[in-house]
Image (cartoon, rainbow, N blue to C red):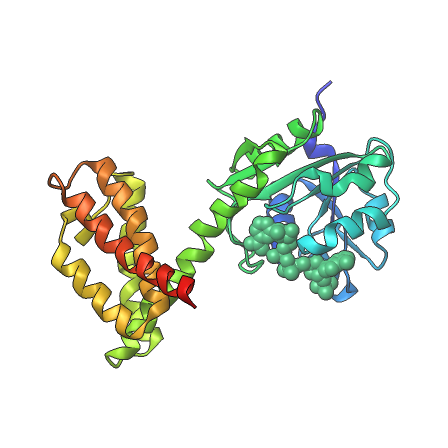
Length: 303
Ligand SMILES: NC(=O)c1ccc[n+]([C@@H]2O[C@H](COP(=O)([O-])OP(=O)(O)OC[C@H]3O[C@@H](n4cnc5c(N)ncnc54)[C@H](OP(=O)(O)O)[C@@H]3O)[C@@H](O)[C@H]2O)c1
C-alpha cells in the first residue's frame, strides 16, 4: 500500500542553509516537521522557532528516533559519520541532500535496516527569506527503492518541484554539471568584472552593468534555446575581434586568456550546431583559439 507522505513525521540532522529552506517549505505545505538536531543546539533552535510543533534536540539520536523520515543535511563530509552514529530502526527512512554522493554514503543506516535515499534540490539555497517557495519549478533529483522513492517523489511534487530519478552512477557527472552551470557562472562574472578595473571601474559597478547582460543571456537560453540563442563575435565569425581580445588578454591576464580560449572552443561548438558561420570560418577560429594553447604546451614541455 502506498505510504502517505503527508502523515510522516519528518526530521532534520544539520540545521544549516538547506535545512532552514526545506523545513520551512515543507511545514508551509502541510508536512509534519517534528524534530531537528545539529552540531549546536543554537542552530537547531532557529528551525524550531519558525515551525509550530517542531522540537530542537541536543541529541542526534533522540531527534532521529522520533521521526519516520530523517533528512541528513550536514555538510557532505559529515553525512557518513552521522549515518553511523545514529541507531536506525528497521524500516525507518533516511536520506541525504548532497548532489555529489549516492545513497551508498548511508550504508551504515542501510546495514541497520533503514531505507536509504537521496533528495537533492538542484538550486542554491541560503536559508534566508522564509516566505515564498524556493523549490517551485526546480528539479529535485531523487534516489532510493520503493516505497521511499514514491515518498520522495510526492514530497518534491508537493513542493511544486520537478522530481527526477537519478541512478547512483550518474551522480558525479550530474554534480559536475551543476557546478559548471552555477559556480562557474559566478566565476565568469568575477573574471568579467576584474577587467573593468583596468579601465577604472570598481567590481561592484562592473557587476551592476554586466548583470542585465547575463540575465539577457539566460533569458535567451530559456526562450530561444540552444544553439539558436548564441550571439557574439564567434557566432558572427568576427575573426579580427577575437584576435584583438586574445592579444589584449595574453599581455596581462593569462587566466582570462586561458578561459577565453577554452570557452571559445565550447562556443564554437554551439556556432557549428547553429550553422551560422561561413565555410572555412569555423576552422580558422578553432586555429586561433588553439594556437596559443599549443604554444604554451610546447613551452611547458621544454621546461
Ligand atoms: N545550500 C545549498 O544551496 C544546497 C543545495 C543543495 C544541496 N545542498 C546539500 O545540503 C547539505 C547541507 O548543505 P548546507 O548548505 O545547508 O550546509 P551548511 O549551511 O553548512 O549547514 C550544515 C549544518 O550541519 C551542521 N553540522 C555540521 N557538522 C555536523 C555534524 N557532525 N553533526 C550534526 N550537524 C552538523 C552545521 O552545524 P551547526 O550550525 O549546528 O554548527 C550546520 O548547521 C549538503 O549535503 C549540501 O551538499 C545544499
